[in-house]
Structures are given as structure tokens and as C-alpha cells.
Image (cartoon, rainbow over all chains, first blue to last red; front, side, top):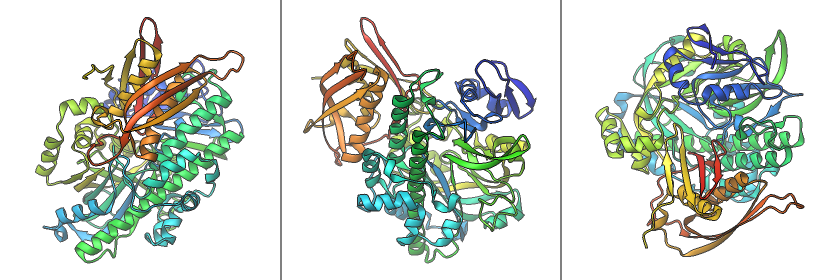
Amino acid sequence: MELRKINDFTWEIPKQGAMRVPAIIYASERLLATVKKDQTLEQAKNVACLPGIQKYSYVMPDGHQGYGFPIGGVAAFDLEEGIISPGGVGYDINCGVRLLRTDYREKDLAGRRRELLAEIFKEVPAGVGKGGVTKLSRNVLVEILTKGAEWAVENGYGSREDLLLTEENGRMKEADPSYLSSRALERGIPQLGTLGSGNHFLELQKVETIYNAEIARVFGIEEPGQILVMIHCGSRGLGHQVATDFIELMENKIGLKGLPDRELINAPIKSTLGQQYYKSMCAAVNYAFANRQMIAHWVREVFSRVLGSSAGMRQIYDVCHNVAKIEKHRINGQEKLVCVHRKGATRSFGPGRPEIPAAYRPFGQPVIIPGSMGTASYILIGTKEAEELSFSSTAHGAGRVMSRHEALRRFRGEQVRNQLQAKGIELQSTSLKGVAEEASAAYKDVDEVVRTSHEIGIGRLVAKVVPLGVMKG
Amino acid sequence: MKRKKGFIYLDHPADAKFQAFGRSLEEAFSQAALAVASLMWEPERVKRAERRSVLVEGRDLEQLLFKFLSEILYLFEAKGFLLAAVSEVQILQPKAESGNGYQLKAVFEGDKRNNHYPVFGEVKAITYHDMRILQSAHVLIQVVVDM
């Protein structure tokens, strides 16, 4: 495939065939080499063919092959002529990350780390299809889908301040649960307040390196050794079912004609079905916000119980990694509202954007990029340049390079656990098989991903954190 | 009775990909169901204590397969049901005049989830990515699932 080098980190697939716009891939030479091995480029091209796409079909530095849209794919669509696609959001709607700061330092955890993690493991339900602690009624679920994290706060999980420090203040107002199928609700009822499994995790971390002390301080990160807590999970079976349902509804209503890939099924965003998907997606986003809000609350409770206090455990931010949003962007010199799909990408608004919390507005939003299990994670800051370069988006993680199957063949869960322990990282997991599947060698190098984001300027480095304890579903 | 498995797993960077085989569509669909279940638990260890009727319709065979396999995920998460075996599968050919595509009837046998059955993997969703249904002397099905 023809790939034009724009600069050391930017590659273009020129407009050709049915493409309405060119595609841009943000990658270092090394990352590009892995991208070329799978269908990422082909998928970026396919996305560029969709009606109403604006400027470019983008792939972020952690991009890899997904379904229909690549993971790490970002695309914005005109609200009149454009489309909305469940495949452009992903099955795990609002899979995202919440990060809490603490006043604790590594030394405060000396001898208590194992206990702390074990208590969190007891408190936060995790594992495959594991039920939560609360038995919800359908009416309460509908309220959660409408109000998101706000519901959680009203019911004693965390504080109002948390909402201010969450994307969308923890609630997408366009949510309309009445469009969700009975099956989506049934899958959502038992799983609220659960971490899930797969790549989802909860980590006790310490700050290792601070790259930008001024911004770090704004986010509440003061010095190396400071303890943070990261929570990575999404909308669970409810979100998966919303995606599954709307793929079918769109196929039946709109048909598959002219689609290069069936997973690219979409509906005009103006259409009734397009709007129903959007409003259902918003409801699933809210479920995930509530989910992370509850888990964060339990983590604070455990800190209080084990270490005596959870004061100072302020939320740094909570970001969505799989979502579609209506946002204002400057296109060809004109401000306009577009529907930005981010599938495995993080919003990275720079200074001045009204959507970000007042405390961060002069600087930019925190971008939270988890690494793979047992490796570093990063905190970045959104930039002004990202508005021009990527519809204010950057990477979301490491990105898999090895199949689960291959990982299972190569690694034993025991062995991975021992290696983590040798590095001083505690592990709690419901499944050693899951641990083997998530071995960090099965992922791209997250260091290279964030360095690329930083160099391009779509998200700049603030701090690097490393795990002290990992809880996996 | 020990039967040879009618499916294999292939390498896929992010998720799980498998091929299932059969002498008929029905048999290949059943094997595909077991391939999905085997990513989450060991169907051969699950008691056949409960029977659940399954009825799905699809505009084409791919959608029929997508919906059939999605049943396993729904029954697991919403009802706590672990699939052990698939029986009485019947795929009805499309009726030209109705334009309704295909219909599938089957019985899922299995048991309620309990601590005797380790559940070790989570399939989030079935996908159409690289989905193939090839019919010749034998039927070959290929599916990628999101994990």
C-alpha cells in the first residue's frame, strides 16, 4: 500500500479509490512496522470511505487491527451527511480509565501493600461474568443509565467533586435507556460495580518520573514515590449487548450494500436509528461511569480501613477510551459540530476547552494511558496542536501484538506472577490463565507509544507511573 | 464417550479466532458454539442438567451465526447458564416470498454456573470480522470473537 512519509512520526495514505479523505497514521518507524503486519492500514482506508468523514481518517500511535475500524482509530463525521457506527466505538462502550491521587508515599505502604491489595480484591467484584454486590431492579438500572456517575454519588459512592473531574461530569445527558433491549438490561443488572476480566485491571501505582512538574502539580502529582490508584474497566455486558443489537438493527434496516467490511455497518447520524444508537451508547457510557465511580469508592474505603485514612484521594480524572461524541472542531477555518468516533483513543483537549474541568482549563485535560500488566502507565496532557492534528485525540494504551492463544502457549500464569513478584509487583487475580494471556510481552511497548504522542504533540508527557500491585479479573 | 473436537483456534493479535467444521451447517454451527463456550469454560465438564430452547432468525447465514453464538453470551451473563452441548439443531432455508432469511432452532444443554465449573475467559462479543461460512462437501465456519 502506498504510504507517504510526512515526517518521522506521520504517514499518509493518499486518497484513492472510494476514499473520501486521506488517512493519517501517527507512528514511529518501529511502531509502523508492527502496524504494517496486520489489517490496520486497510481498515483506516475503509473508514476514509464512509459518508461525511472530515479531514482525515486517523490512526493513533498504539493503533492495531480492530473490527471495521482499527483500534486507535479516530474519525469525525458531519452531522448532516455523516454517519455513526457501533464499530467506530467498539463493543466495550466507554471502556475507560479513572486515576486517583493519594497523599501516601511508597514508604507508607511498607509491609502493608499485600494486605491493601488483598482487601481491595475482596471488596471489588471481578472475574468473568461475575455478579456485583448490589441486586438492582430494572427501575434503578434505568436511573443509572440516565444519570451515570451522578446516580452513584447520590447513593453514597464518592463525592460531587469526583463528577467535576470526570469526562462529561460522569453523565452524557443525551442518554435514553428506553432504546436499550431487554437483553442489554438483563446483562447490565448483575454486573454493575464489577471490574470484569480480560485486559481490565485495578493497579496500585507509584510515580516514577515527572516530566512536567508544573502540570503534574495541577493534576495533584507531587513527587516520585507518590501512590496513585488506576481503575480500568468499561460498560461490561450491557455495552457489548448495545453494540451487538445495533449492528443487527442497522444491517436489517440499511443493508450491507457497498460496505467493504461488515463491521463498518453504520446509520446516518441524523436518522432515527442513528439517533437511537447514539442515545443508547450514551446510556452505556453512563453505566461505565457509574461502574468506575462505585469501584473508586470501595478502593477509598479499603484505604481508610487499612491505612487509616482516604483523605487526599482526589480523583485526577476519568477518561473514555471507546466513545462517539458531538464536539466542536475547526475544519477548514470554520468551527463546526462533528461526531468524533474514538475507538481505543483518548480525548486530548488542550487549554481553553469548555468541556474540561475548570481547574485544568488553563492547561489542558489529563490523558491517562495504561500500559500492559506489570509495565509503566503514563499521564499526559492534551494540547492545542491536537485540535488541528487529530480532532483532539491521542493513544489509549499499549495495544496487543500477540494473540491470547499464543500468549497461553508461551507463558504460564505462575511464571508471569513470579516475574511480577521478582519486580516487586503484587498480583491478585481470579484466573492464572487470564494472567498468562495478559503477559506484558503480548503487548506493544507503551513507552514508544507515548513518546510518539509527545513528539507529534497530540498529547505531551507529564508523568510516568509504575505498578506496585495489580488486581486482575 | 470422548469425541474429537470439531474446531481449532487460530492466531489473532487482539482476540480469539477459530474455525469449526461439520458435515452439515447444523453440525458446524454446533461446533462453533462449543468453540465459543470453550474460550470461557470447559463444556465437556458441565453437566447437562438443564435444557433451553434457542430460536434465532437471520437475514443471511452470517447474521444467523452471529445471533446464534451471541445467545451463549447472553445466557451466561444474564441467566448464569453454562453451555455443555448443543442438540436438535435445525436450520430452515429461506422462504423466497417472505424474504425473512434463515431460522435456527436448537436446544442448549448445560448447567447453572457454580463453583465446580471454573470460568476462565470472557468473550465480550461475537464479530463479523473475517467471518466465513464455506459450504462444499463439508462446512467450514470461521469466526473472530472480541475478548
